[in-house]
Length: 79
Image (cartoon, rainbow, N blue to C red; front, top):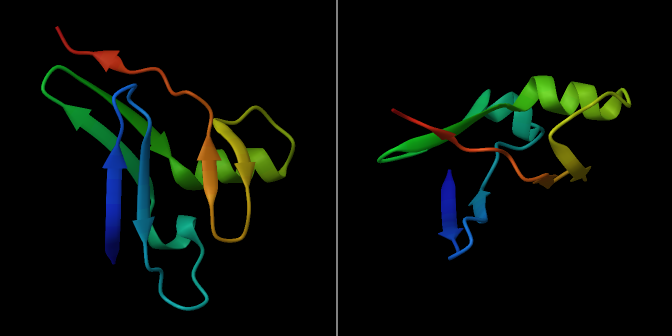
């Protein structure tokens, strides 16, 4: 399913995947868990999308049928 991914020098990243026909991003993937050596971030994709479409606080900046753009998500630093 993964087609490509890219992380630029300021920490922004893009993930491109092929989804099964008729499936939404949230149906194909439950969460996005970004981790590296000493930090990470977690996004519950369905919860955030449901909040977005219902006009509630969400980590999603904008959404289309085939794309989700998230606001800056804080990275948790591990001790």
